[in-house]
Image (tube, rainbow, N blue to C red; front, side, top):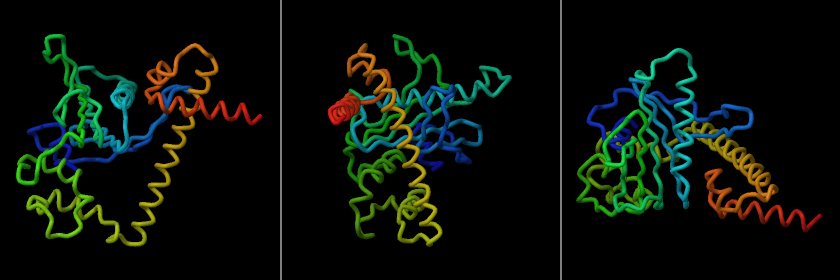
Length: 254
C-alpha cells in the first residue's frame, strides 16, 4: 500500500507508515449526503488518501471525487482552532476500468492552477488512473506505477505461476498478489471478509436509496431536466431515467 500510494501520487518521498481510517462518513447536516469510501488512510505526516475504484461507466466520477475530497477538507477545518497554512494534504485517487478524461495518458495528476497552467495550490490533489488507456506490455514496465497498473489490469487473466512477470517477485507486489488469494484465508478471515462485504453493500444500498429519494423529489417538482438533475446530484442520466421509470410504473399500478 505504501509503495502503491507513492507511485500513484508520483512522489519521490517514501511513505513510511499508513494508518487505515474509517471508510464511512455521515452528512455534515441532517439533509446532506453521507457516503462510503473504498479506502481512506493517512500517512505518518497526517496526509489523507482517499482511493476510489469504479468498474463500470462513470461519466460524473470527477464530481464524486470532489465531493469526497471536499468533505474530508471540511472535516479537517471543523476540528477547532487551526491555521490554514498547516492543513495537511488530501490526495483523492480514482482507479477506473473505463475512461472519463479527454486525454490520451492513462495517469493524470491535477491541482489548482490558473489559466496559464501555473500551479496555485497543492493542498488538494486529484489523481485518475484509467486502465483502458494503459497499453504497455510486461517488458516495457519499468516504473513502480507501470508495474502497479499492469498488475491491476492483468492479474485476473493469469492462472499459472509460470506466467508471472519477473517484477511480480518484488516484495510489495508479491504480498499484494498473495493477499488476493482468498483460498489461503482461514475460516475466521473468510467470515470477516464476508461481513465486510455485506456492510459495504448495505452502505452502498443506503446511499442509493437516498439518491433515489432525492431524484424522486426533484422529478416531482417538474423544474429540472433529467440532465440537470443528474449533474446536480453527480449521477448518470441513465440512473435518473431508471428512477423516473420506476415512479411511472408505480403510478400505473395504483
